[in-house]
Length: 459
Ligand code: ASP
Image (tube, rainbow, N blue to C red; front, side, top):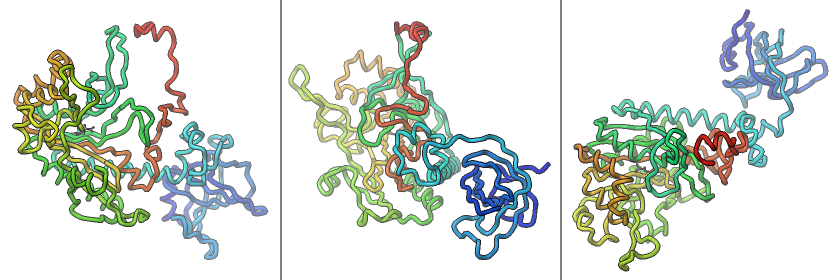
């Protein structure tokens, strides 16, 4: 009995008898001879069959046969195994396949996306998507190693958590054991990562799922992935420096052909970005068609607060935070924050990282003293009771000797989509949802039974 080997390993087996397994990717009949392309996770190999077996596209088979050099005029330079082929001796059909609803040998852009998503497991077989996920894996592996080598600890934080007003709408999950109460799915691990700093970890990261229940708007997904990070005893400079190095090293390693427009990444203040480019995520590329050009920049010095709709009962303006209620004021602005003076002028210790006109990440130095966080919450109009209910745990935790800390989070899907020159993040998410939040393959969201609803106290 031969053991199955991967197709990529047939390259050094010329003259040997081996066994491979995979699915039929193409079939060409030439009189008495038939050729098939066998595809496995490592590559593709031409197999010569003596008699035309009843093999159809996507049938899953195992084949034993001899690996031969191809005649000179038959060499296919396009594929790695183009210089060899297998002469089949024994074929075992492991599973027959139905006809697929669309072609798998193309890049798939020509296929209606709803159909692609309904049969995503087939869509994912195409070369382009296989590549996207292999590269995605290379990127996350590189990031994990890079951070691990620098003493970061990867820590998972809960998905069933508490609803806090952080900017977007929460997804909520009813609790069966605590009737009438709800968990919220995290919009980001923001509070947990800060609590890990209180816990003394000093350097944390996580490749974290985040959930935001937003209306259909552009290229967003209800759940997406962040590279989330937090560090103790650092200032803005250190967080930016480490992350700039992380980004550069990742790209140099995974994409040796990409070019950086400018190194180190230019830094632009929010004011300058708005005045010069009319946006806080400027696209600095000169030639926007050049697929391998990467124009990074940092945008800094954001206003902490902006006016919200409406007025307070006493006629004073309502304020909301522009980025993150947990941010600290930039150096020099702390006094104003504590005195709640010149609110519109206060600058946050916030930094965003922009790539080719997309904000791919952002973070800040945080308020590590409870009284400063409390001031922010007061400025955005929260009453004592709301502060206690929603943020009491944070204020308490900071009071137990929280170290100064700050962090950042990258939208990993967006970052990878840009690097892969993909038009949207769905192309780098294995099982994405439609713009209106449906999973067409699993048919979610869907109704649940009356019994389930009753158990959850929803009926
Ligand atoms: N939690 C923030 C966000 O999701 C990022 C950060 O400040 O670290 O946008």
